[in-house]
Image (cartoon, rainbow, N blue to C red; front, side, top):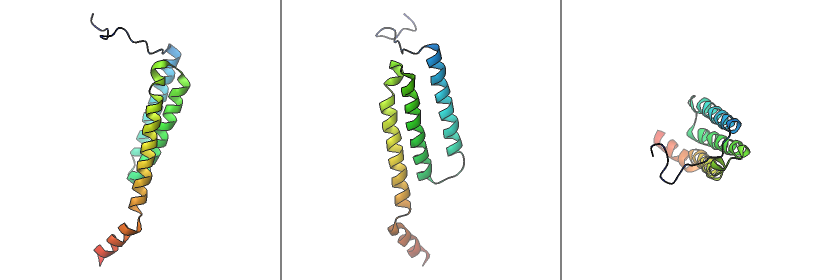
Amino acid sequence: MPGVPPFGPVDSGLRTENMLTFIAFTLAFLFVAWLVIHPVRPVGFNLVVLGILVTILSIGYGMIAAPGVMMAVPSLTKIGFLLVLGGLTSVLLATSPAKQERREADYE
């Protein structure tokens, strides 16, 4: 049958009001993420802010409480954590004394 997945129809558990909330959260996330990334800023700052935004998005998805959406919440939280961790690492490596010494040696 065309249009039916091979293992039968998948019920995501999203009702109309949940679907509208899901779409609103997603569009708000995309808009705010674009506002964060659009100006030229250090990569570490962008990663940290995007990680926080992804974690907030996962909390919002968790409030919807639909089975199909709830499966994505732990993964989004882990992705948000990794983005924040990567951003902090990038900031720490960019401001490390060893890198500053190398820059000073390049100018001499």
